[in-house]
Length: 321
View (spheres, rainbow, N blue to C red):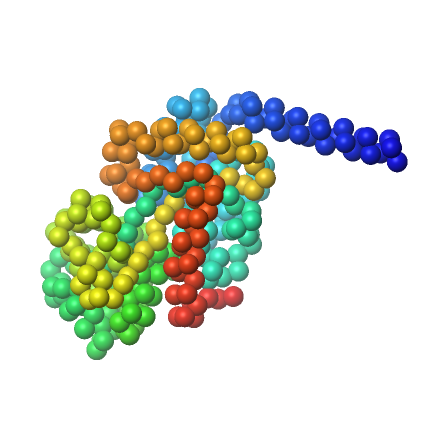
C-alpha cells in the first residue's frame, strides 16, 4: 500500500512539474485560433487583426482557422477536441456562449468546458431601412408593422440581430417575420435589393453603405460612442420610452483545464496590444474595440448576456430544447 501511495504521489508531482514547465515555456510553438465564421467575414477580419498583433507580442505565429456554419457548434467542437494547453484558442461570440446554448441542446457545456479569458470587441444592433424607404421614422415603422407583415433581414437565427427582432415583437406587440441570411452584409444586400422591408445591422453599416440605407433607431441602451458612429440617431427607448438592449460581445477563450499561468500570459499579451492606439484604430474600421480582461470579469460579462436573452427566448418560445 505504501509503495502504491508513494508511486501515486510521485506521479502527481511529475504531472505538476510538467505542467509548470509547460506554462513557463509558453508559448514555444504556433497558436491556432478557431474562428466560427467564414474567411472574409467581419468576425474573421476582427480576429485576424489581433492575431497578427498577438503573434508579434508572443513571438510565435498565431494562426486563424476558419470553421464556419452550424451555429458555431462545429468550431466549438474542433476547439474542444484539442489539448487544454493554450495552443488552441476560440474566438467566442454571443451564439457560442449565450444564445445557442439557451435555445437548443448543444454538445458542450458553455459554462464548464469553455473559459473566456478576455473580451475585445462590442457592437450594437441598429434597425435599417432602404435609403428611399417609405418609413421616415422608427415610430412609422412600428405602426405599419401593427397592420401588415414587414419582412426583416437578420444574419442568423439565434444571433443578436434575431434577439433584437424578438425584443421588438415583444415590446410593441407586433410580428416581424425574419429572413435569415449568412451574414449582416448579406442582410444589407437583401435590403438594398428589395427582398426585405428592413434589416438589423450594426453601427458601422451606415458608413459602409452610405445613402443606400438609413438608420431608424439604435436597438440598445444609450452608449457614449453612438454619436461617433451614428450621429443624431436615437435609441428605441429615447424614441418610444420602450427599452431595447443588445448584447454583442466577443473575445478569446481557452479550454477548461488550461494552466492559469498560460491564461495569465495570454491576457497580459492581449491587454498590451489591444490597448494600443494604432491597433484600436485598425479594428475600429469594423467594430467597437473594448477591453475586459481576466476570467472572472469576462465571465461576469457573459452572464449579462444570459440575463438579457434567456427571458426573451423563454417568453417567445424560441427554445427548441
